[in-house]
Image (cartoon, rainbow, N blue to C red):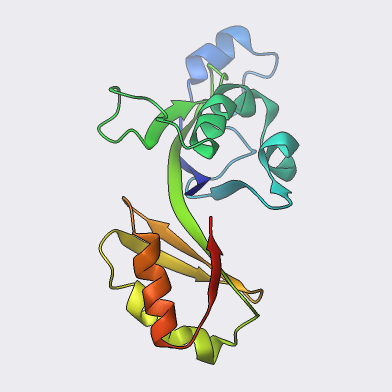
Length: 177
């Protein structure tokens, strides 16, 4: 099983009374860096390692200081906040700015990478994807040009079930990560 982390900006707050009292520019306003609804995906698979690159420059350093520990935990497959949230794969956190905090939803995304013995066309992958998406616990499938697909899961999906489905369409699975 592999893991990604999705960070969504769910709200921005402003405390003008605190800005007026403590900030050099009392009219600084809300955080200009993030917008509500923005989503960022972090992964550590193959050559991708977004965590050590601070989201490839997509994150404010004050926010990163607060949310990076949860992102790291998610990327390792851990419980982001065991017992605190109603789903251990999710955490709600905010940045350090006390006068204009940004609120984030941090989600661990579990997935399996299914590698094939060759690159397959979309036409070849279509029936396999159609079948796999009906399996219990499968949330979504990301199709890639290279010889693999990513199966997003909410729970476990038996590797042998995936291999058997591929064999039905004369597709050889070399391994599943």
